[in-house]
Length: 137
Length: 386
Image (cartoon, rainbow over all chains, first blue to last red; front, side, top):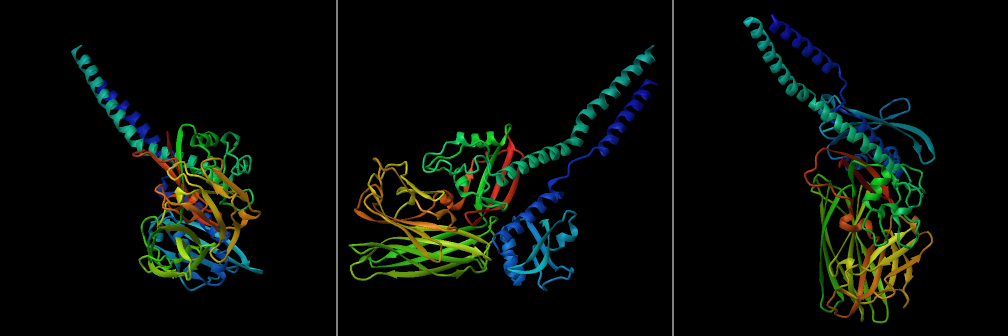
């Protein structure tokens, strides 16, 4: 009889521990954390803008230069996909500004997205909205 | 009675088995989570430290240049940060502060001091500033015996940090050569423009010549490499001497500071004949040296001069010409060219502050693109438990 009681008590204790384990909040792993990718994305766009290159690439449609600048600036294992819109959300440019296997963007559950706004080029006000998507390859 | 004892014994055995299993199984179930927790904690501390390093100007705000041309005293730094106080933009670093992290002849800040100022007791860290991509180069200089012509062949290989080639990088090799005309010295430059192929390589050659009684002395090749105008890296290559054998070039604010190497294998006087600021399009002569402009191991082991507005001329390099003896074996006086500033050029443009121990355990790495003196670099902070 005591064996049964002991087993029952043990089962209750194990069930409680298992129950708590599933409810315990666990930190997200680096592989699924997009906040760092978002910071990197904003940092890169800001730096290219700081060197007065981003507006030139976007408004003069220098897509190859923009792609090259992003490729050499981002960490080697990060893939990207950049979309550019005007203020009415119409897509600008028919060329793809991307790097890496684009399948990863659909298969990965951790895609970081950074939005960066350019007010205009030189003296003309003509905003462009840049949406940079990043994923670890 | 026997039955009860039997029950007790069985209960004890079953409980013992379950307890033992729990001791080993439950921690292993949560071990992965503990690792994540540990990693996340390291990552958060690394992010916080990186934020301070890149966005804080430190105190005094000009701590990198506050001592002018005197030796730097690290105890005068009250708060650590590398941000440039003259530029309100984020991720722009003060070159005077960055140079204090390198082994600087005018004094540097120690690892233990930075660790103390950042409040990272219990942790160790390393900081690396590296260019966005690597430029490997080789230069072959063939001189005619009459010293009036020289053929310079060069080859560069541009690649990302993982070894992938960088095609369509623009390489500007600039050949600077010192000419001795007997009565006067001068430096001349020849520049060309080349593009890397799909394997990230490009090569070329250039003939330089002089006439009359002029002779070509030292030759140096500087490579400026850009990708989509975004990143610029400069590396130099020369054949006659090790640049560190002559002098070390440092810029503190608007002041050029030259100092002698610690190794006294070449004890001869170094006369500074000329200093030019070169920004890859034009060169500006800053100084034509006189008898007073010299370095030696006697009373002139440091030379400095202030040039108003020098620090705002970026990106730019200094080209210095010395009248000196090359190497410890003498061989007569000749012209030697040196480019600088010194600190960020060492080891191919890579600057390391503290090293990562071999076989260290978990660590967190944070990388950010930064701008130092107009050039793009990657700042990498690696943090681990002490």
